[in-house]
Image 1 (tube, rainbow, N blue to C red):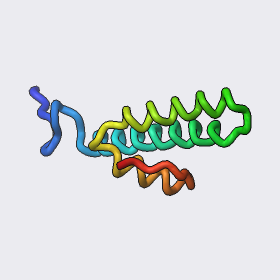
Image 2: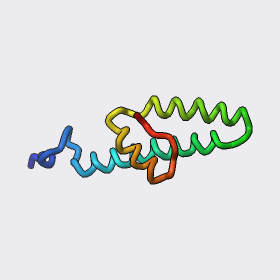
Image 3: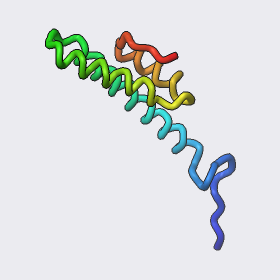
Image 4: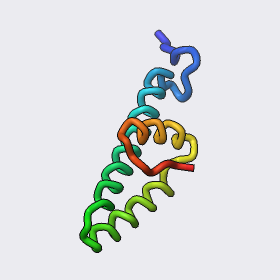
Length: 84
């Protein structure tokens, strides 16, 4: 018996699984940005510098197709950083 991927799937991956993966990835990016931003608020200069570098790098690495979803998570996490 030959099984076929569900209709609308890409590479044999269920569309619902793709949606969940995108959701989890966007949430993960937003959490990382929130954590870096929280470090930036600490008064210790070295930690602020490190947090600033980490935040800049994270913002640069977010895939363009996920930026809208990451921004939605950032709003929910009350994070000041937004992606362009």
